[in-house]
Image: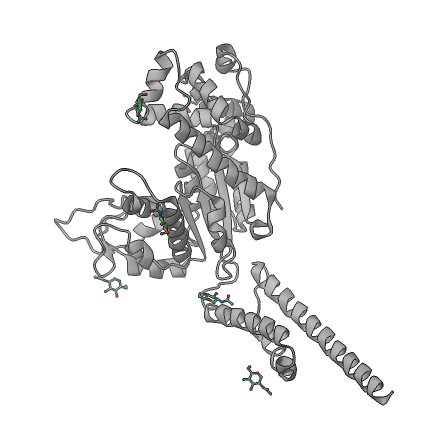
Length: 435
Ligand SMILES: *[C@@H]1O[C@H](CO)[C@@H](O)[C@H](O)[C@H]1NC(C)=O
Ligand SMILES: *[C@@H]1O[C@H](CO)[C@@H](O)[C@H](O)[C@H]1NC(C)=O
Ligand SMILES: *[C@@H]1O[C@H](CO)[C@@H](O)[C@H](O)[C@H]1NC(C)=O
Ligand SMILES: *[C@@H]1O[C@H](CO)[C@@H](O)[C@H](O)[C@H]1NC(C)=O
Ligand SMILES: *[C@@H]1O[C@H](CO)[C@@H](O)[C@H](O)[C@H]1NC(C)=O
Ligand SMILES: *[C@@H]1O[C@H](CO)[C@@H](O)[C@H](O)[C@H]1NC(C)=O
């Protein structure tokens, strides 16, 4: 009887302790989850007063213990890097593919002003170095390298990128950073070394005369800026960037820019006639070999874009409030409205500099002559491809990229007449919802 009573008591006390521990763990986990939310960064001191108080039971429950040590280790990891985490800092990644207007949209961030560190296609170097002489790549290795380099760059660390630059920078100095002049921050006074006569700068600054790019100076400048943005047409799968979204040192916002694949191909055929010789040939010939390497490449591109967008639109926990899908056609037609949306999504104030850049560089500057005429003219620009792309080629694109056209709201054309008829818009009104 007495033994039975004692056992029950011990059992009861144990139960109470377990319940208490669980409470603490969930409180701690809540805090850790909160930490992931950018708006409420975790105060490390907020946890330190909880942890030591409950030391006593550590040895009793090994499971609890290991849960705690995991949390503690994470916390240590977090504290180690807390100097990097700046309240409110945003890390914007503009993801696109070639000929989707990404340079233009990248300017929306490049022109932000003094608070933004912008990089234009830094992954160019990574792709170049990891592409074999045969032109093939190991996509697993490439994806990992992209992820690591982007993660470091968002933390203003250029060391990994340096290892991909050829020739290898000496003392962090390089003359060949791809399109340096397209990142306004890399040509600012603070990153401008004196000119050395007789040395060829591959990508010269156009806004002022600068010498070699000193990547230590670039890194220092980056650390001074509140926000960072990178534009890339090289990432194939959004999912590969999950570690960035989950990195507590970062507050990453992914903006995926898409465009009608028929327009992209039409644009490629004009911009890279040599690369598109086969397409041009097929336009004249009778049959398009649907299993040709070029057609398969087109299908793979469409599938990759769609897969990323499907993940983004599904809003898994790791992407919540971190993903935005944008159609180039909407930006071209309503640049100011879409830029405002992008800035709101990124959580960054929309500066007068950006506004005036957009006014200067888009049809929006003609808004004085009436909204209607502006919109009509912009639509014309965006649908110009409809007069250059052979109907047969449009059909092939519709065949291999059909699901993508549907997902993004691009209307199929069923005849040459429909393709060329300007009164029929091929862009369906479509709202992609984000929370
Ligand atoms: C509590 O735990 C910490 C870390 O595990 C240890 O350094 C400290 O001595 C413990 N305090 C007590 C009172 O057991
Ligand atoms: C702490 O950081 C290291 C390296 O950054 C990582 O390997 C490890 O998994 C992290 N630990 C936890 C508990 O997150
Ligand atoms: C690709 O790279 C990964 C990681 O570096 C490696 O494990 C794999 O063997 C490579 N695959 C091929 C086909 O070379
Ligand atoms: C590059 O910049 C860093 C930081 O400003 C400076 O210490 C270093 O001397 C510079 N390197 C050269 C070669 O000028
Ligand atoms: C173009 O077509 C020819 C014949 O179909 C094919 O052998 C060749 O590989 C194609 N070229 C490209 C760049 O795909
Ligand atoms: C559209 O804009 C272009 C260039 O800005 C201009 O040349 C053209 O006349 C405009 N078209 C119409 C219909 O307003």
